[in-house]
Structure formats: structure tokens, C-alpha cells
Length: 131
Image 1 (tube, rainbow, N blue to C red):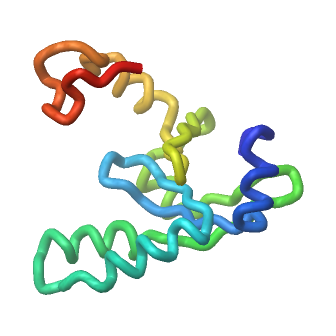
Image 2: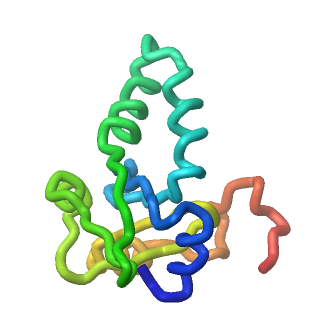
Image 3: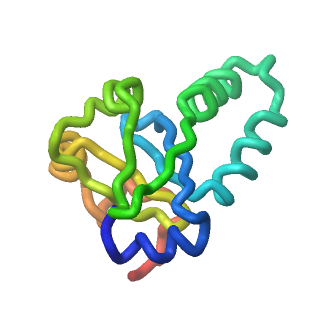
């Protein structure tokens, strides 16, 4: 974990995180207090709907509790490393209350093919949005 996030995570969750799979074939890392309401809401949904059941299987089925060590490192299980095809080089991307962990090659490929912020493909919610 980058040094700039370690102290905040130590305060927020004492270094206790949840790591799980994402449909984009990356991993999601949540501070434990941020993950718990997500899991509760997800599991309260009807598993009779196949799409909901698939999402429950993915997010909750792969979810693992992990802890940062004193150096800010986390151990990622072989199952999750295989799921995200993580190699030695990874990218950690902050996303508000969570992080995404990507294989460097997949991350680079994703951005090579993205249209960026302009163009006609933007969703209507982003019309007029400026940074």
C-alpha cells in the first residue's frame, strides 16, 4: 500500500481490508467498515434473480478479509491473483472509498483503447461535466 494511504487506512480500519473480485477482472480493496454495508445490501437482495445471484457469487464469494502488515503490505491469495491474472507489476487505483488493483498490462491496454473524456460515447449523466 502506498505510504500516503497507510496512515488513513490505519485510522479508518486498523489496516483491516476486504479484497474481492470485480467483473472487469481486477480486484477491489475496501476498508472493512466500507465493505460491510455493501455486503449486507447485496445479500439482502433476492438470489432468485440470476443476475443478482451472479453478482453475489462474484463479490461475496471471492471476498477475503486481509490485514496490512507494519510495512503496508497485503497478502493476496492465489485464487484472487489468478482471477485478476496479476503478474509482478500491478497498478493500484484509488476510487473514493475503495481501491482497484490491476495487472499493469491489462491497465495499460484498457487505457490504450479508451476514448478518453471526449467524444459521443459519453453517458448523458456526464454531459456538461468538467474537471
